[in-house]
Length: 615
Image 1 (cartoon, helix red, strand yellow):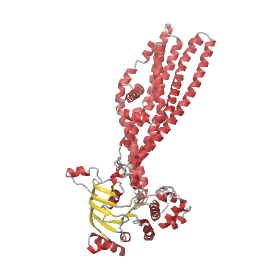
Image 2: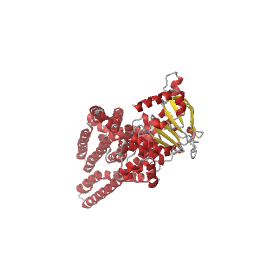
Image 3: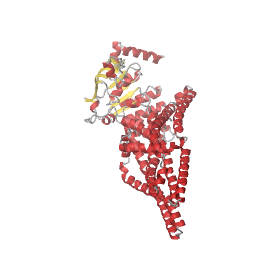
Image 4: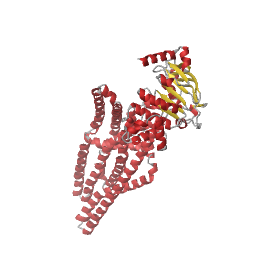
């Protein structure tokens, strides 16, 4: 196929793809219809937009015909009145075209912006509904790319693509119809090459689809690596690994460049080819039409109109060719977004999930087995080895008791706490609170009575006050300040430039580790949880800060069921029950004195801690 036919071929390809999408015969038809469904709330403006589009298209088709009439009815006929009337009509058409084009452009932008805003909110709400396990399996940067790069690609398709897609199609149909009416033979000569272009379109579609999908995957990889590197910049700096990360980014950028260059190669020859093909068509019209005019078989104005309409014909062809890039990128982005939205949450409330009301805080595990592999039970049935994080756990924690979990790294302590918070469900057995299996308890009802202080408290950008009040945004300032005083955070807050209203930056970067942890404790206390989980919450603070936190813990733990994961004796000794985990199993359980007397694993751990403290 000659290069000059590529642009027309691409336009035919786009029209064929759109027709299959509309009829639902394309595999993407369901997705496109779903995307069109985003416009349903704005259908009134969408209808007005199409009316404006029809007016603009009709007005845009009138000038070549009027130019021909100026020659035949005005100049050749020597009729000044007809000439004035036609020129006046031309001016009216131009004004109508300008007004309709403004209206359609404004409405497309208005509708597209709001539809994509709705889509962003839908994706964000969907992400908020996913389980913790989903985020351990998916790269944060890739998810960000769905919300940014892919939405932007759809934005280009919806806002700039819709007008071009429909107005250019209407223009093509209008030009073909007008040419056939003006002169059938001249029109058929002009259209002679078009069937060949339609036949070749399928091959190009297959090649370009894969190329544009690859560009979405490559930019997502770049975004993911950028997010991870920026989040871990302190680690990168401390180990002096900037060159290695720069090299990795260069490789990812090179892969992104190569993917994009494939699309460049596919499009590089199209634009001059259109001009060449338009010139060839014009030459054919002038040659064939000129001979017909000399023989008196056709009027001169018809030839002028044909030349004008040929240019009008090739303009939408060129626009559709340019749009094909936007179309492919947008459809590749839609595939990615749809894959995300099609991912069902693996932690959902049962249809009959209950709100148990105010919890007493009794926790019970019965025959609990849990592994992080989703196919753990299937692997077990096949006789394959399964890494159980917890196995055969039977335990009851009375309301108001503090349970301390101890054991080596990887023993299952944090996993135990995650099951209580219902971040995961066990593969076997049941976890219940106040006698209710957590699978039958509404997650929101559970979480609003649950407080968690992790090893490193995550703080949001904003003020100290906003972070402490995160769980209860409506809490009055006096109560927030009283809570901060209860955990011993008043002194450092008062020393900040703007006190409790000081902005602390992303992740609380302007605070020390100990200060961040004090804010995290205050946040948990203000939320008034019935069940409190402290996951090595004091392991990253100095001794002085730990003493301050311990004084706050006395109030924080009072009257609440608590699960404390800690390595420091001072936190563990006051627990009502201590459970030692080894390899995901309960090795022994009891009070501090009972376990020391037995002389088992806890006694050995206690001895090791005592020796390290003395050293």
